[in-house]
Image 1 (cartoon, rainbow, N blue to C red):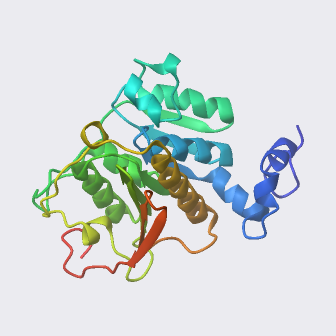
Image 2: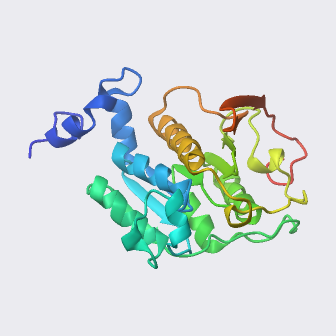
Length: 267
């Protein structure tokens, strides 16, 4: 197969990603950046499913997905990367198969493990999980699709340490939220600026509170969009802004967030 002169893409890739290339904001240069990029996705459940599908379909060169869970029947109400045939399989294996079916050119690293978490209220010097620290350091963008605050704070700490942009999403019941935490953007806060490490957070989960199935698709798709914008260098990311969705009325609310100079993580 011939390679397009000076662009590094094959004829097949030029055709496959033509709808991106036709966008003036992305073009061949932006798509090539996506093809060369490395994304780390923590969580292969409700949010992670659309994230992984869209990153793979868009051609992100290397996608690492981390999750320690297995597919259960209750997951199938919303976790679209998995099927009935996947029940009992590791979510990372099921998601990897789905991504490969969409785009066999994408390199996938599937890790069935729990991303190391610094407990809430832990001292500032608490060590990061070595594997999480290394994974973040190797990534161009990190997407937080997990469901607990301790892991979210560990991911954030690693992203702050290595200067890697973090796309954070959350969804429960009919309420969703999304933001980007990018220390490269002046005055933009890290996750801990908005949700302090020592804040006593009441953990809630889909298992006890429920979640509206399409909500995770909406938020996860937006996370993928923000990640692709960051990788291609287009548009205005949600750094310093948090968008919240009330899916009952399908109403969005946006709030501005600022970096906390006294933040225990980035201050």
